Image (cartoon, rainbow, N blue to C red; front, side, top):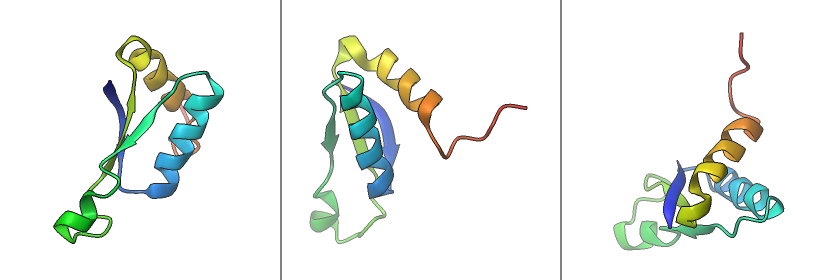
Amino acid sequence: MEEVLRTADPVRASWAIAVLADAGIEAVLADLNAHILEGAGVAIPRRVLAPTEHASRARWILETQDPLAAPER
């Protein structure tokens, strides 16, 4: 498994998991409960992990479909 996204935004992490699932990539959310151990709330980012063989494709999908990405000029 390789990290394809790191974010403190739980909605964005959930979006990434859903977009990758639609593309047939089974991604997982890591560090989901780390804030409980550290008591840091959203200060600890969550990581979206994808299988190594699909990691580069997963990154490309997230980069091209990210609604928060700045438009090209």
